[in-house]
Amino acid sequence: MRNVYVLGTGMIKFGRYPEKTVPELGGEAALIALKDAGIAIKDVEMFACGNLYQSNAMVGQRILQQIGQTGIPVINVSNACATGSTAFREAYLAVASGMYDTAMAVGVEQMGKQGLLGGAGGGDPAYSVEGKLGSGLMPAVFGQAGIEHMRKYGTKPEHFAKISVKSHKHATKNPFSQYRNEVSLEDVLNARMVAYPNTLYMCCPTGDGAAAAILVSEDKLKQLAGGRKRPKIAASVLTSDPYTERDLTFPDVSTLTRRASKLAYEKAGVGPKDVNLTELHDCFATAELVHYENLGLCGDGEAGAFIDQKGGCHPDLGGFAPVNVSGGLLSKGHPLGATGVANICEVVWHLTQDERAKDRQVPNAKVGQAHVIGLGSACTVHILTV
Image 1 (spheres, rainbow, N blue to C red):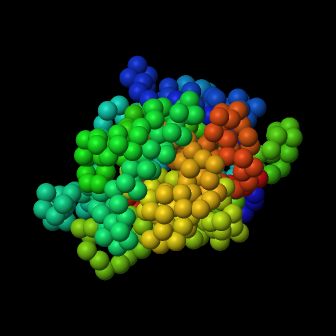
Image 2 (image 1 turned 180 degrees about the vertical axis):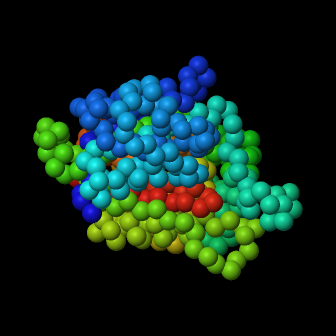
């Protein structure tokens, strides 16, 4: 496998674009990434597109109709919340394998005001517990994960609320974020309850968005980078749930990430203490807290102290292990297919001191990771280094 680098990135502000189509949104992000890379669509040899809600509509080909059809192979990816990051991985593998020197990945979604729906057990009512034993809807699933953490470790609702406060504060420095307002601890705790312990401000907003990345081989990088520092993809990992004899009425939100994280650290030759910033999948505040431990940013049972900023190692900008300095899904938004590529864009900008991250720049960032989990099951972890 060859070394692969991210030559260019592009992202549009997450929000709501009822006047635009999905291909238009994806095409806009792709053109930004191409310009950032200093190449044209004719230079791209392979294209992977991630989209969930229009996955049967050949969105990748429709994006090329917007920006230039050159006859290249197109792969359309649908993989729950890990859709965009899986598309990025397909582009990575295409270059790493030696088949292509230049590939493009785009993640795009147009959700409007749709909620984060989805249930456990698929369409067979024999396996559905919806309305019988809790709920298979995502707010309830991650509410249950938070309650379990409270039961095991004595975590308090305030710990989850502090994550929302932190992420909203970070988002004020991110012009690509859907919401850029600060909230107080009291605001978060007193907001409308959605699924205990997650209140409204502890739940990610949904909307529209797109992000893109151009990936190249090392030889192509030398031709095109022009001396610019470009991050290497040190690890690209995708996992699914292993078989286990367990009660599926309580979804497991941790095993996927723990396996992916372990493999990624091994492939990259780094450990959690080497990571300078993390963009993780905080669809709910409870999810972010649980993933602190799943990614090894702190020990099991220590996530409450981690968000409490006990010592220099904490997830705020300025801490030893900052998490979601973009504002995360809680503020940036979560257009499902776009999220995975957007997380990688954020990491790239910090590693290269890109102007797009200047107001929230993590100083001297050398190693960054991007994590996305799609219950159902898919999890990606990408580690990038400079």
